[in-house]
Image (cartoon, rainbow, N blue to C red; front, side, top):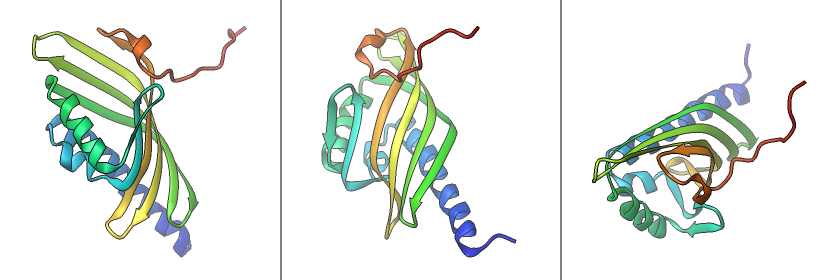
Length: 156
């Protein structure tokens, strides 16, 4: 039978997973305030190499600006891995596929990963840090995106 800490982790894992899905939903609905509300006030976020956004207010503005560039988006998060560092902190990785349609009708799709640090707050689990790393993109120059990193070497 699971002990209390194991049950707590199951509930925490479910809450973090639900927050990841909400992040994608709010992006697709063009709701930057709700999307940024999933982060702590002093968060750090990077969507581009070496460009860190500091704080929820700056993140809200960045999301507002970025999302208005698209007529439609569809974000999908999967392959979620969560590791608890203690009762109130966790790290997580998840795969993301994000389709974007610009207002001119052109489209691009991102394939990558979110690298996250989560913290428990009075409001529940919130993102303290998120970094996007890209495996590649179709319909966009992916050299502008942060590389995912992959071990080199061929299989024999």
